[in-house]
Length: 430
Image (cartoon, rainbow, N blue to C red; front, side, top):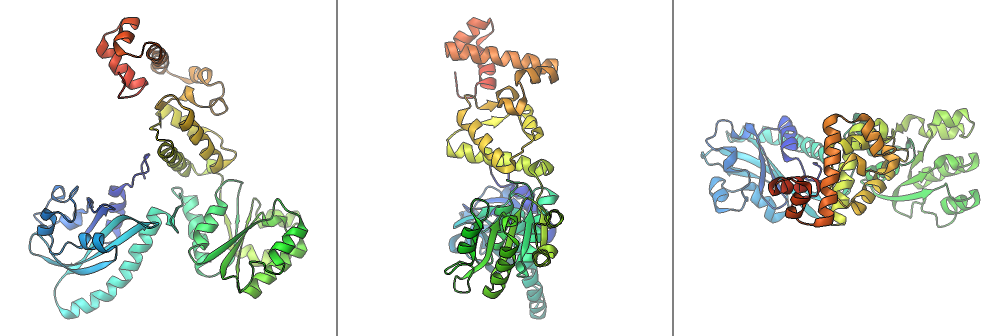
């Protein structure tokens, strides 16, 4: 995804092409956005003949007979059929719809093989079934979507955590996810285990042992074979007493419900403090997954900033963006509250900023220290000149409101004033 939350079709297409040749990608509106080189190889058709064209256009319908992408676009269903191309070559083509919730997000099509004979067709059909399953898994991994939710996993640490939780979930095993507050443990557990069935989430932190025992183990509790839930996600599971640890594990086993424990501490740390029973350790130890703080997942931090910036801009109908210096400052900040703090901070900046381009001196003082003073200590001469120039232009424009008046006040040409106003205040203003 780019900073505006748009899908990078080129990047996704090249990755999918490494799995299977002859890949094309159309967006949710049926417009082609990517055509692989392996598809174009040996054909007279060029990428420019296809990219940007609607699959149902007359031009495309003449080029492909039938157009599989258009068939998927109309039916919202997977299609596999023989397609004749512009060069009269017959190819088996599979088209797959990819959804974001209920909305069609994109259509991925790939060429299976050129038609040769029935025996070859039968043999390759079996291969296709395997390749199709593999392709769908790769699409899920690339888009990082689980149950309609987006799970950001740009760093190797996040991808490893996501993979491990997925392995344990698919095997019907329990899971113990630990890491600092706000690092995304609950979202990871719910998005992965939620794909297997209904979930029940319970937080042990704010309530007493009596209340926990009543709500988790009492009559009518969700941990029951009659509840129909697949897993129970227990936040702050380390708050359970030794008695409740044994009771919860036993009840989950009897009910056929998978326990997923969340904590800030590893089992080793809890065992060293005498806060867990051996039965508890035995239940969860083989299935531990660590989630690191956001400051230890630099690639994820950048993606979270981009994601929340795009989300807040859309929510408040803004078009705020960060300068490279401001973004660098955000990436270097110690986000002690992790993802939650990033979310709150970026939303506040978008909501309160008077400028479209937020620079380092526009960020909250807690992020930059004394803001402009810190900037002055580390800035180059060019940065300092630009800093003071932007202040003069913004101040003059706020007072006089026209490029003509700003030019007269600062003793510059109107053309220069217009260019500087567009640079520091925003395009579309006079």
